[in-house]
Length: 241
Image 1: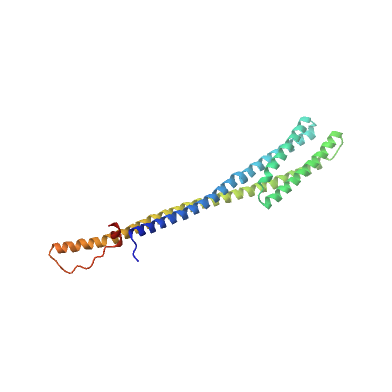
Image 2: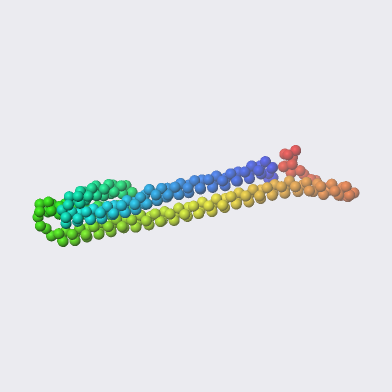
């Protein structure tokens, strides 16, 4: 069945539109994934690392002020210790909502448990100091150092996991961007090639009978009166007429 010019152009238009619609749907889905990954990197992984680093700095400062108070009995050091305790509690509250895996949750729970143990030991030591009682300072110091090391280790592990998650998401984002570019390029090439092919075949089907008619007209002008085959105008020319 022969197509008219209108039908061919309509068919070509539908093909091109379909390709662009499919491209639009694909790009929309991939851009949505890319935006989710970008937000997760910025608001979860990167912020987790920042809060953990700040929390560790606060913890080490608190330990330092606590030891200074136990040695010097200076109340300013004690006040600094208590203030940093509040800051550290705030940092933990900020970090907790960013924990998005069971592994991180377990590490965080273990770190909190260690910190509570540290505070319990410090409370006992503060009581001894306030009452002027003697106690094994060295033993308490060793226990606290062990707890602080464990606390640091758990949070460092959380940091490593967050960095690994961030790197994976960055890699995935890069792959998505690359795929979008490839699919877009291929689609544009297909659209251009499809348009050129359809235009070529349309032009060829229209020009063929015209060229044949010109050839026979030239033969008649030269005195050649052979039987002229029936030349049927294609539907395209009929419609244009």
